[in-house]
Length: 109
Image (cartoon, rainbow, N blue to C red; front, side, top):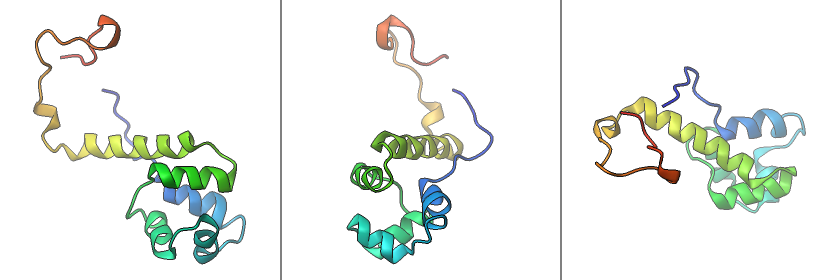
């Protein structure tokens, strides 16, 4: 597993620094434009919630990006957090005889 030392940037921070500030938008204005509550957008910007597929669709329409951009940012962040929280997943061993896609082991012992 590839380990990153720096925690990936939360998508909410991207929204704040690349869209809200440069466009002089308020949280209330952007929330209204996206059709979501101000509280939900505030929670996203303050890194209390993550990007859902619905939110990725809304953001991609508003900002002219792709939904994959937002989902990939969230996925990268979530995987980094899971890897560093060490909740017991590291004790799970590969099942004998199971191979990854294309006959190649997906995980190294």
